Length: 475
Image (cartoon, rainbow, N blue to C red; front, top):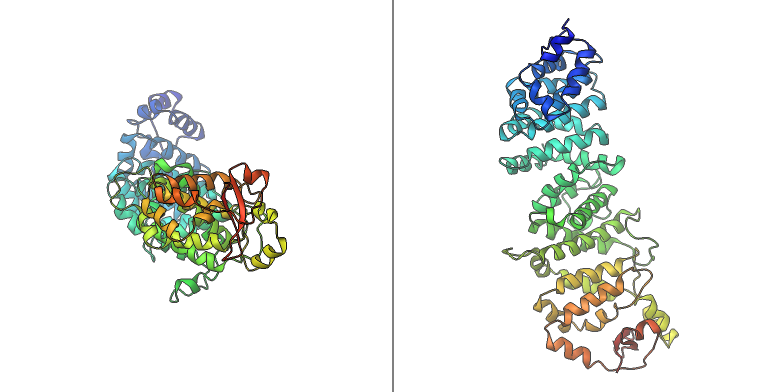
């Protein structure tokens, strides 16, 4: 048995007791302590114990390996040289399966090792991908999912990362790992940010959203049929994925190195399909998430598109902006159609002088399936308009200026609608004399005043051709 003095000078023996292990764990918690332990053989002894010990000392031994490899290049190099990947793999391959606590610390250890550089990442990937990573993903435990995402994200970064990311997104090998992780996060939650970073790489910066989104569809879905039939309904996991991506773009736009064209176009495709599936005859009582996957997919698709347009506005060096691809693919036409099909905002409906006429003309119009749907449509249009003369021109040519004017009102079912409506009108009129002249020449017919509408210099009139209300300037 090693003496107390032996432990202080770094002597490590296999037969050291729990007290010695606790001493080493305490020392390994600081950079200085790890540096002092580098020459003692502590890592080698801990790895031997990990591979052979199934007793209560297994977890402390794993923790020691994890701590020693946290930001310490000497131990990270030694881990590979000492066969560390095989030693940790033996833990995850044990029968019966290791407890979630053991699996979590084992994954934390290899995640720390992978931070050491390309040699470490290559060694970890060669040993753990895909089988052991998939086994870890199937724990369906957030405490295991988080360090697994750390290991995957680290291995898919820097030199060699692009190749490994492609392997991770291969349908038959790596993709099941991500599908299990997203399913776990959807059902049980996740505490750390590694999954956010990983999904940013997979979906936003690279071209794999379509593959992952389809993989999260109902197991009974037939992938041989067209997209419209394939997404005749959406799953909770699909809505959750889009929600995570929307939140990431909202909270960390500066962390996104690029927005891939396939990502933007896939979101537009999903929006188009969702808009054909959602029931617009039932007025929503809450913002997303509503708990109804199709409605949530609709809402998150819109907010992602809004973020894409806002993000792109800050990028001057892009060779082909994602928003320009979206516009070429029909984004503006889809948004205007959806907005035109909606009933007018509540304040306009309530202000109509001829209520019977309005009710008769609006019975076929759609309602917002969630609170904020109209606002989200207008916000995407407003961001598309920013600095784009051809979008300004198209809106005028589509006779959609009165439609946008209609959105410059307060609406209790669409918080911030007025602000987004005014932003859209600003972008529509900025530097465009033709649009400014058309707004100035709008004539009044059967005007209706309310304090809210008059306060922004507008009144409601009935369009003779359509019978629908619209907003025009006060003369």
